[in-house]
Length: 207
Image (tube, rainbow, N blue to C red):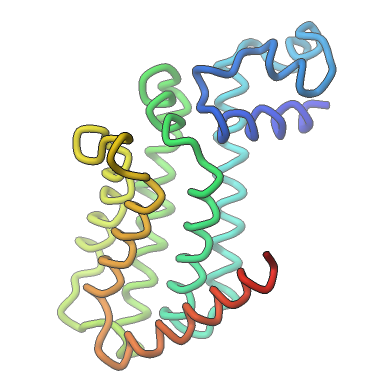
């Protein structure tokens, strides 16, 4: 039951943001009483923290699988591109704003995850790509990794990309595309586009 509560709460948070989802909403979706929820969780903040940890564990498994199954840094990037598209397609942009403003513990967990695991994963991909000759050798992996982490969050900034003018998913993919083109050599770009076409074809065949 605890896992069921977290799974449904996570789905609701992704779809509607955190603030607009109540304990009553979660209970109604699972067809249980709020009292049952309180047997497992102290309050909504407790649920948010557990959902955040659950989501980060899932992302780690996804990215670890991408890294282990990729033949090189370019294939890894193409798979990450597909993964990013999928994850942001399912996310309400209000989610991160709600965490930052109303659920600081969960936000701090996300910040640590971003600045440690994600940053290290990006830096490792950059070092691999440089060693393989697919990325420009002038790149400083630590600087570019730090920049990439911040750019992802920047796409949610309402002052830069107001929601009435921009779709944050399109912004994210535009920024990802810009990131890749700043990394690759001419030959690397051709190979990346071939991998990307393969990933897109897989998406189209599954839709």
